[in-house]
Amino acid sequence: MGWAGKKNGELIALAEKEFDVFVTADKRLPSQQKIPGREIAVIVLDSNRRMDVLGAIARISDAVQAAVAGDVVAVSTANKR
Image 1 (cartoon, rainbow, N blue to C red):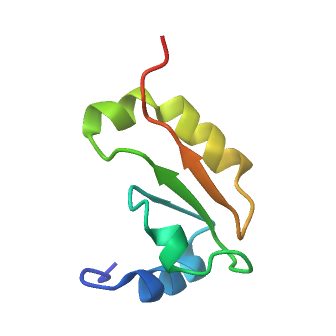
Image 2 (cartoon, rainbow, N blue to C red):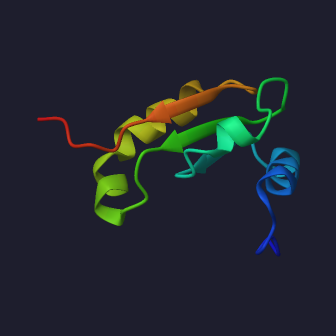
């Protein structure tokens, strides 16, 4: 999309024009950016390791489906046994 190198504020502004949900592993993003009132929801993962994310696909999908614009939702990628 040509967004390489964009900083968080600019990235969120661009994303909310194109998408309903932004998924990130940047745990600092919600404290650095004002998300409430935006037209995009933010899902924050606690890991970006491939195997962690793959193991949490169902939880991530549920969070995306339930996401409401302006919300920030944390999703754990830890395996639940």
